[in-house]
Amino acid sequence: MSDVKKVVLAYSGGLDTSVILKWLQDTYQCEVVTFTADLGQGEELEPARAKALKFGIKPENIFIDDVREEFVRDFVFPMFRANTVYEGEYLLGTSIARPLIAKRLIEIANATGADAISHGATGKGNDQVRFELGAYALKPGVKVIAPWREWDLLSREKLLAYAETNGIPIEMKHRNGGSPYSMDANLLHISFEGRHLEDPAAEAEESMWRWTVSPEAAPDAAQYLDLEFEKGDLVAIDGVRMKAHELLAKLNELGGKHGIGRLDLVENRYVGMKSRGCYETPGGTILLRAHRAIESITLDREVAHLKDDLMPRYASLIYNGYWWSPERRALQALIDHTQSTVNGSVRLKLYKGNVIVVGRDSKSDSLFDPTIATFEDDAGAYDQKDAGGFIKLNALRMRIAANLQAKKGK
Image 1 (tube, rainbow, N blue to C red):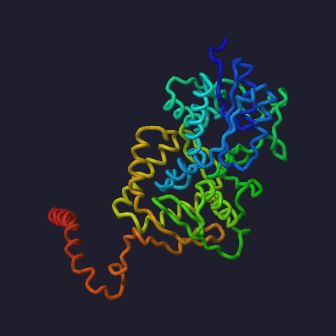
Image 2 (tube, rainbow, N blue to C red):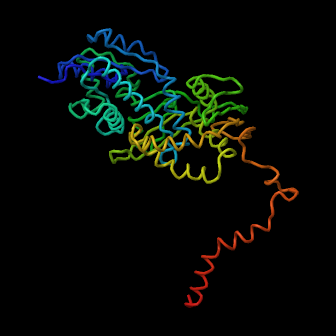
Image 3 (cartoon, rainbow, N blue to C red):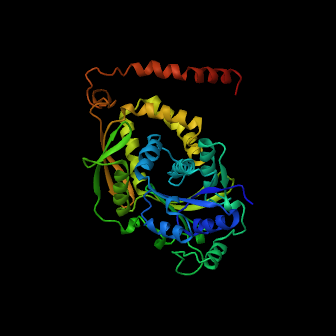
């Protein structure tokens, strides 16, 4: 007899978590609470409620929460203040959603008196690490049930067979037979893994992409866009102020229309293997380009370079599940401090998969001084003779070393 009396399941209503719900009931003989997060994945979430009810979940134990604003405001925007990119390309769309889900799982466990949480991450993946590190950071004594590390349903085909045997309705079977892509979506991105993407030499099917047109099919006319920033965060598009999640949704729409934000990536997973995935991050791609542009005129040079030095470490912390760690919080405090002067506007041109910066301006915090930077007569604002001494001082150590080598006859 299991000592687990009640478990909170991160429940999407898809293949994995629908099977897990039934498996928890059969294996642990416990009460199940379901949590479904509306992260802006663009899918109807009420079917998840209907499925949960079908398998005997009490109505009061079904949580479907709209966390879109919290997700973008408290997780995505803080990440983009750091210009965060993992391994030079990946904008961490899946990674950044996990700490919020972990937070809500623990909040619901506390509210319902549950003694365990459960998730559908596989034993090969990163998400098991992200969910569980977050959970333990927020509730050290919580029990975590990870079915993929316990059961023998270790393939999509076995899961589909289990679902059919137990009367679990599963949508989106691949039209050519076999298992569907493993997909994850939220307001920042949608990811695709599995099927023939497991061959890193195979080009992704055009029909796979959901949010973006191909660059070839994008409009022939460029679209101009004005983005306004306050303290490093996007606050308005073309002069229209919106909530954080509305701004990102708008950028997704515009970027998708112009074929922006597709990525085909082989990444290094936390568990040691390489994994190939395809991603659509149209809004995030635009946001990253614009944020760097406004920082280029509002950040001190050494502060900007320090941020660039720290960014890969910050990205790895998020990728590896350490959002709630003291070191990530410390880095965030530093990053947020640098953003107090990151105010102003950026003008962009969107064209066939490209995000082109065509202007940037900050009336209150720009460090760009045209009287010094000009190639015309600067009226004495900059003394070019100063550069000679600066160069000689910086070359001194190399001159000494060269003279020494010359003496040695080398």
